[in-house]
Length: 285
Image (cartoon, rainbow, N blue to C red; front, side, top):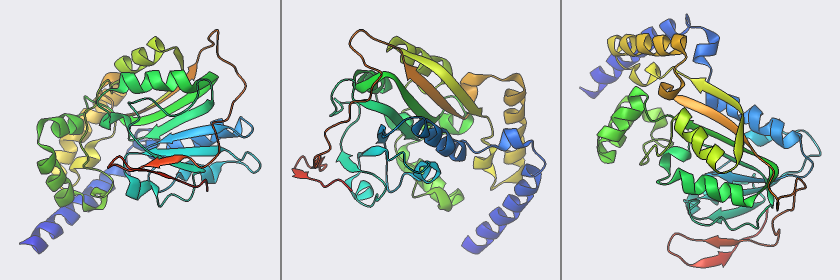
């Protein structure tokens, strides 16, 4: 039975890949790949910038695009100690909750970036506020995240997380390790998220959207075609709030106390706090 189901899904996927090859390149663009050169370009614009990578995980793939001599000081923050311990790209690791107070001085951070993190935060407004408090004037935030009102996100919100993980492992086992975590999608649609950012003193300087989410249904060609028809309609109409994914680049506006000059965070060995609450000293890479 398992072999028959796998063969059936593989046949459907081959048909879906053929359909996908006919779609416009801009429609199919992978924002996860677009995110990397966007982040690196902002790092390249500064000399020795302090970068906070939220949800850094095991690697920071944008660093391979950074030009020689920039030497960013990258602080990786992740809620999973096991993941971030394997990250050899960062200068310092921190395990913690980013919706609580970020452990950085005011006006000390140049760039804060995240990919597929915001949807997992219960309070994105609190996090954006923390970002504003720690960043220099002119500092840049770059966030890539899925959107609350796309069909796959609505399904993810309606079904229990255990069932969602099971279905993901069944239909997309290649995504099982990276996806399937509890998602809240708090403020994760374009108009709301940008309003939250503006309320905390940011201006939106760039944005990109992806509407192609039919790929989640490529295990069954009829479902894929139905979802693709929906995606193409929303794409043609340009309805941002129902896009499936977005990248938002925002700049912190000047404040009375801010400074456009980067003030690096303390580069001594940072505290690496384990999930159980015990703290121990880490060593900058």
